[in-house]
Image (cartoon, rainbow, N blue to C red; front, side):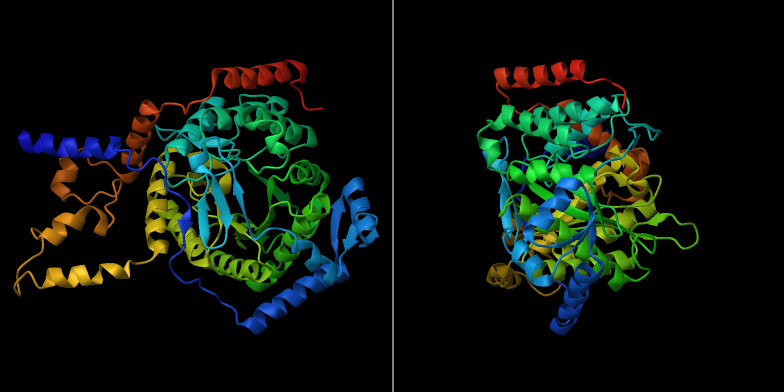
Length: 506
């Protein structure tokens, strides 16, 4: 019985051990993987510029088209053609990096350079709950995922639409989501982008927390703007960009790439198109406010030519991420991609393989802002509680991998070699005792017990172990401090606007 209690104690410790509360964004210590030569980068750049000069990009919004015309672009209706000198001049005013202030000043996050920040998944209308049941996401789920993002030390933002709370009317949904992100976490967050009014209400809620004068000029969030590939920026996204960029809030300019459907059936061809779309978005933000933080990047998927369904985890996605990273460094822009993505419907081998392969490619490519790092299933349609925990552990591993090695430890290690005899072992040496907890990563959710021990403990697979961890995390969650008057004002604003806004979509 004492041996059983010992194993049980170790298992319980793994589930309740919080480790570090916060780990700063990764500072890269390994080289980038660059797939193109300098000459090839220039060729891709030239083809990108030709797309914007000859075909152009549609900005389907009267005010936005007028802004381009006033800036000297060739505008025909909504079609905007931009010459390369003008484009490069505009994107040169976007900063190479920027810092988001957080509710907790110690959790401010800088995006750009050799840093990588990880953020949760975005937009799933369904959840795979702790019992393994797939169902509509609810506001309670949203609160839970916001709490888990706060508790996960390797997630650097609380996220945005961490799931779609389907039990809240669409016109009210953004209010409850932004409230949850601000109330349940003290990390930076993402704003609503589904209308100008909702972006403005996000800014107002941020102003309640940070100070209305502060958020006029100080970046506290990074929000998502998706292009409608091929080569369209629609009014909804542009309206939100105008609100956020005018207040110096960062925007991710992200074409939604379905390789072979919304882009050519070609890895390099897809990258040329998405680069043109993203650069056009970045340039527009600089028309709104020169110097506003803007992130170049994409959401990537290839399309199965058998079924037409999006695919995750294919080698071409890794290639595209590496190409986009190389181009971002060419343009001196921070860049975004997606991380732990999977097309799987459950937390199985496919989910693990695809997510790990995506994350590895992202880290090798050197992404600055990794959206959809945790929980992602079904090509973004489903958010899994168990996968949030499993992916969080993968983020810790990727952080360790990309931090590189510590060459300074060589002398001490060689001294340890000299303390033993040939055929001996190091388990009891002073060097091992001093370093065993930090020398090699020891995952908690990957079971390394013997088969017999694993059987005695219930024969639990990774999804079950991860669900146990999530239950433990939510049970011990305590909200970060928020002044009572601020919390009350924030809740009052949400309740008042919900009473004023009709529930039905007009």
